[in-house]
Image (tube, rainbow, N blue to C red):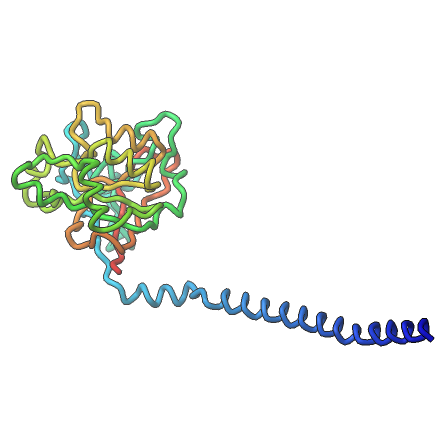
Length: 287
């Protein structure tokens, strides 16, 4: 009798386990379905590019680029640009809309002209040329370091590592992957007072600050309003930023219209094969 009771007890336990197993299977199926729904919800929560463009369309855009001409201030080691109508090879006459249905301009100028990009190859034999800079490095978070408060007493103030740390104390850590711009308001003299714009010495970067931004903050590029990064005879800051594999934008403007943080910068230029520099177009999208 005892053995029969045990046998029945085992049968009862075995029979009771089937709905438990079915319940586990149902729970697993439910959990899997729930995870699928949640993952789909997360994926759908990401805005589409069309939605992003609709948001950007209502933002304020600030042009950070000077227009250039034959009289544009240029580094003393380079000639002024020459710009004249494109000519017909056979006659040497310019193309005109009246006679030919179109017109065009011939440019003869150095790459480092007006607001321009310096790729790493400008200072590094094996550095990236214009056509090799990744597209994703042409739209970046923008931070602006304003050193104009120093310039009344120190017209050639150099943005130091101490200045940078003071800025971070006020505005927060420089985000990784950012474009770091130095505001000096020199751009205001670009057209109206070119001699003042080309003055020596001028306010600029220190190598220590730029090196910290590259190695400790992971920035992608720098920009400034002057013709050069710094006033050292060896151009140590410019040499460092380019030889470390980062590009820079020179002769910027309107940085006084951009907040210290929160904006985006978009920078682009012609895709010149093995290009060592070229006029660029840069603009900021404000938050």
